Length: 288
Image (cartoon, rainbow, N blue to C red; front, side, top):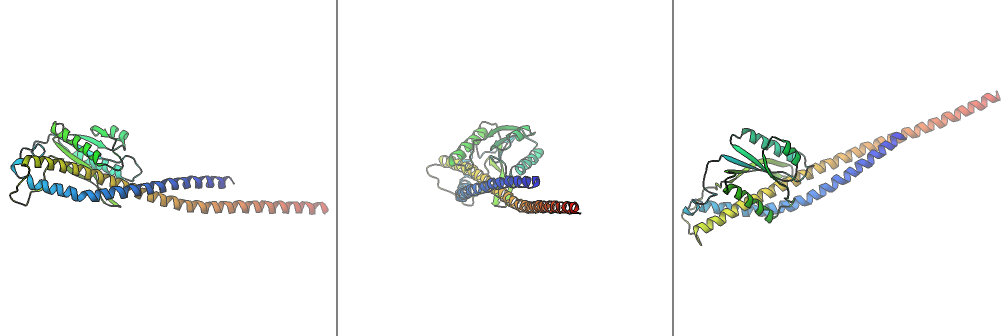
């Protein structure tokens, strides 16, 4: 009976775990749908901002813009987008490993700005030069959060604390595929324009300033949504696998429980039969 009680306790524990993983799977699926919709809606906007900036970047008004001017990149800032928590497979560790490989090859001075709450202790104990950790970003990035981060990165670039800003994040391709990638945010290097002369209204400088602002903002927001979509997708996949594993384990434990109960019943029957036989033999011996 002790073995039966132990198996039943194990079954209750696994059932509790299954409830948790199933709930986390449903929550991640809902968050994934919301961020994926926002990401897909933003992509045309970001592509249009990039195309428009490319069309005016070759003009004289863009030559004096500080974000479009080339300068010697002596200090590099890597902006690492990790999740707010774990339980999402290798999502966070793959990003950390990818960034570590980048830093090993880096010959310039560099620092890391972390966006996300995951692994603060782990990152602090690593050899990476962590400049700052932004742990207030939500699981569903908003326009205000993207604007705040974009303004912060622009300020770091303008004051000279970073000569180059590189975003490190997981690019979302599908529910089963996210890959670490880098994207240089600053200095800007839009694609060359295909059109010839343009008539700019109200004036070139105002238009370039606004397009630069839109491009940086849309790029940061796109990366935020890409990173969060990948995180929710990885967590949903991990929780799906965990739920499936708990169900398989429950099947095994139920079989073990049935075998243990059958063994216990068989043992009790054997003891009863043995006791009855011993009592019968005792009575027959007295009669003899």
